[in-house]
Length: 452
Image 1 (cartoon, rainbow, N blue to C red):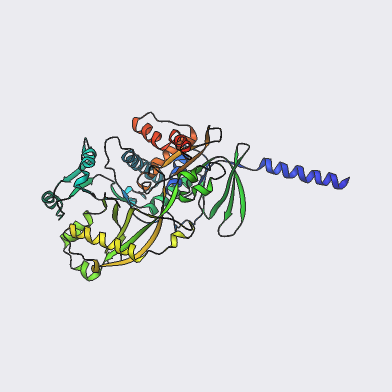
Image 2 (spheres, rainbow, N blue to C red):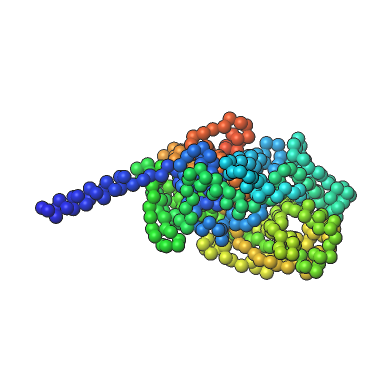
């Protein structure tokens, strides 16, 4: 009888502990640009937020890795991606102001994150209709060279008759630094009183009785823990599909991770030292660049080496390959063909700038295997979940399918996710257009089409 009473007491105590276990208000999974932006936007609204990141405070892999991503505003009339970029710039400025509140001197500036330079776009004359649509009613400042004579006159470029060049000039267009932006977002989250927990790998996400159970492994100690949360935002990039398989399994069918290679190249010292000051200035003012062709070659200046030589970050937006092991893809070395492609396209562009840089004048600094998360339409999701009864689950939001376009609009995506999880809205035309393109109704339609 005594044993039975003892067992009953233990069971009651266990049940009491389970019931009294703290339930978080909102957990954001993924501390890259999208997750950090969302956690900051939630913090800005005074919400209690916990941000979980599986890496340490210093990133070693992931799509947010690096020191330069293209930030560009130029787009056709009512373009949602232009709107997202411009909204993100405004929200970043709000973050900077918040971080400087209470400081006796200015510690943070937009220039820590953004490097403003012209953005160069190159089109084929066969894309003239697309170019005309882009420039029709264009409010951003730009210059347009419709033929080789104008390209030489305006930009000092030597291009073939089949090429069109546009340059965008706008404050905070050029490049942004994801590494610094994430650091400042985390500072803002902490300053607001919220938490960023590193080395926390989420291994399971389930919903029981209206509460999310999040199982976590500490990647440093191996300790396993389970936390509970009323609401969840999933922003785990290519890991989203596996992460949400028990709460929103259809995302694994709608978002496909693919590998992209990135090369980092430099002009050899002896050749770079031969360039005049004017040539070096022309080079810097001509980056970043995007060839809007079938492969979309893009390149930017990642940073400068100790000798102040620019390090070019080079990739091909549509040069995507399958992934065998997502955890190891980041370590995959570039092939000789990938390096050669990078050098050829870089040399070709530098020669268009009237700089005689041949293939042999370029040296390969390093490479990196990045991952794009792709939707069929190439447009990301910022959406609430849909339960099996085809009802909207307002307690869960996923941000994913960024396809390489996320960085420039990161805080805007975070703002949209925040509004969804809190039930906020904005009646502006472009906000509603972006919400419709990225959001829940579109997700419903895509789910219906999975098996068709």
